Image 1 (cartoon, rainbow, N blue to C red):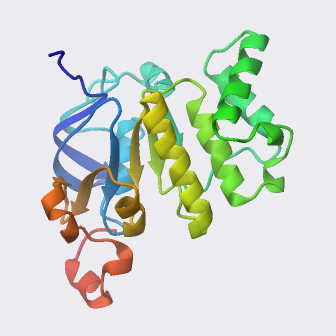
Image 2 (image 1 turned 45 degrees about the horizontal axis):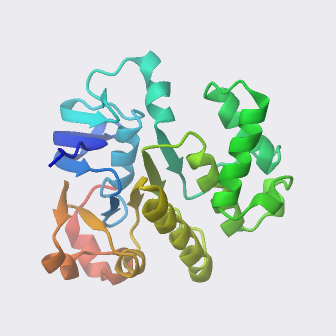
Length: 251
């Protein structure tokens, strides 16, 4: 049997948030085709893991490898090449508001080394088709709904055919119906294209309705929750104020 090689791997990694260590001893492997959630209360280090994966936060202890890049020894000049292997989707979309949908996507392609105009035009059409937004290519971001803006953000993440999409609370600013559409889109990309998805969320409804592997951040650790213990996973909507006060977890 062919050995499965993870696209993201941490061993004994301490994860920093700013100047402080927020998670200790992270062991995590993400394989091609995985749909993996990082869950936990606000402030428990979920987003810090994503920032470490994209080499925004340094890895100072333990081992970390992403798409063949050693996070502990990555050179500054190699970080853009690492990020081209990843697609990142943010809660607040982070589109350029002064240019159209098509121009947003064109900006990313040019910034990541694409040169041929026809190739760029073709790729933009492909990713807009994938997210059902071809007919909105000439719209400005402010002319789109929140769900439509997030679809464009996902299209942007797909441009360079990433090995992994990192989605940081991608449904956090959306109503429940729109959020379902985004989750259907992400799970479809995962299923049909085999792209690994790592999604940060504190919304239990999401990871209950759309099953995947689950890692929970709690008490300065992040560990995988096996199926038989999933009912113990916490989410903001299920935590009583008293319990949150007593937890003492870093924000």
